[in-house]
Image 1 (cartoon, rainbow, N blue to C red):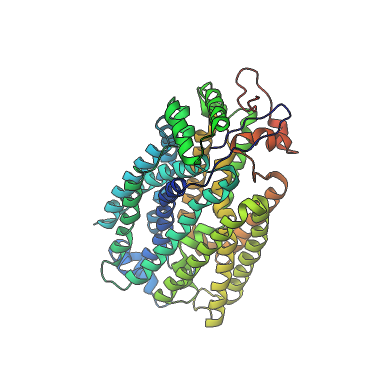
Image 2: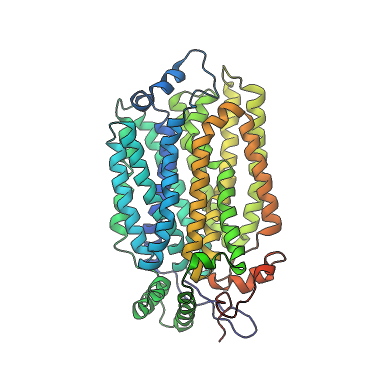
Length: 509
């Protein structure tokens, strides 16, 4: 991980290093944590739209769905059905704080391994579920895996990557999330015709990437930063030389040692987060996670099959439409990987706000004018709906999706990095839980207005980005205080030096 060694003029040199095969291997293996997260997001909506699953666990919803005069907006409104989806995220919220402690004390790799065990156990309980309690408990265990995985992977990637491609490598986490969503859509499309246990296959196949992550986590290295922070200095130096692919790593190694010594002086990182100098990255991290969820993306990705059935698609057609949006999601994330370290973070976020605001508004107008409580859209209108959803997903996938994880992982100083990122992860899981638990009920009561609700949030997001989010492109992780926060018109007022515990200052050489 690039840590700053600044000269007296404040210039921050960038450390040398190659893009080694071993780094790429570590990135791919660790990013399987994202694939599992994405697979769950994608699989939930498909499974909850399968008749066999509804008959076994939610017979009331099944009867409502089959009713001759059903209300399009309300046929899936059931708090227990929403609990099936949302229970995972409240568990992930709680687990992320435990994961923060493990991440600091035992390292990023160990945290990822623990998350992998949770994934495997949770998958087994879900796929073998004989009653609703067992299935929900399986999702809670799976949620613990998500909490540990989402805490460890983005930090692991940011600390492993050379500065010049940190954005691209970190976004591999989001890329694998989108791949997981796509794979889930494809699997749901085929298993929906396997009766009566297609849903078990859909849930159980999550065990494949879970095992890959578990086995692979023993093959990857710990990050040099984590090793040095935990006093394994020689091992950290050897690991740094291995991942950079060069012998001359003295400058980066010395700066990691200096930052680690400063970090060790902070005995309570959560208390340190409450200090004024920690406020800018903490506020940015939490706000980005809240905004990421209130774009409405997970409402669409969780319940895409349900949503497309609502506007008149049959079950198979709805699942196929979900696969289409999944493909758009993957390829648009590749656009982000290519552009994030060239165009920068702010440009992608602002462009996407315009794109998502327009599409959400038009979707809301289309449903408001043409979709009544009974009946469906015409075939032309339904196709337009799919196109609009794809354009919306496209904007999210190259901006708020990946950057919502990237920016918090690169802006905290070492001494508060795991604690700060735990706050970011828990904020994400809390908002995801709220959206997952409430969306179907909100759609029932607000009807088309739900899309105007999300459009309003997107407008607020754009204004926040325009005025309060600084650019972090090309800035080494631990020079954020000097080169970003202290230069920003608003946040610089919080960067107050503390003679006793000032670890936000750049280490001078």
